[in-house]
Length: 331
Image 1 (cartoon, rainbow, N blue to C red):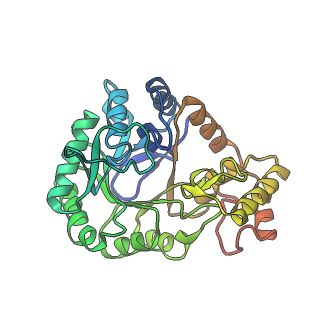
Image 2: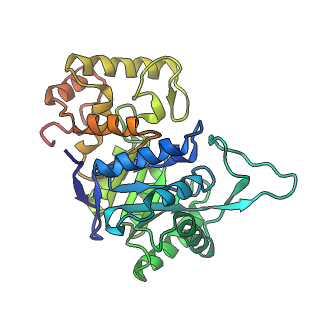
């Protein structure tokens, strides 16, 4: 059964409840063959994952270029694309080397932070060129952790202006933290936020302020990083949590989560994908995939019903705090 579509906040967009992240298509951690990248995107679209997220940061433009080639020729109303601003991709100067920042086999280029209004417009123009599109649906300010003032006073107002002009449909911010996103939602008119890694079975920091604030403001929430970069997909010693080796106590907790899921004949991955939808502010869950097999697994896990008794068991064993909303009765 294809993944269903849902309304994204107030702007009239509809997106898939399970969406595709393209950081792996930028060769995150390891190279991805062109055929595998193409198969992943085709499999996602065929399964109904009509919302695809990308960024210049992912492989220094590689993910955007690959995605553009794979979307070429498809009806424009068949997919929703978001990209991000804040990092410009620039050529290396003679003798200069670039930090790959976790991406393999990247083009000879570097990232330059720029949250100015001009930088935002320039970044969007360059993303459209790499994607081969005349428009994207959603633009997000990307990782302004050390640039909060510039993001709040320049980048986000520039995106609001682009939205008001009709150049994009929805705007917001994407980060691996919840606190700054909360301030943006409170102070600015955002359509959505993309919060990665902060609302999972292992980390519910977004619940304290971000999710209630978004619910009150009518701001949609897209949740990424529900596997916390790997630990909840394959819990074992040596797995990663937030892109670094997981601490032993986190590995132990993930293994205990997996044991409870196994008692209810449910893969941990299925519970991890379902968990964010316990909160009504959550619109879509974003997963990265580097092959058709990974897409198919995510779709199968997403479609699998999670027993209400599993959520009760997680609370009873202390693996979820009792104040955390679960999807029991919701899906």
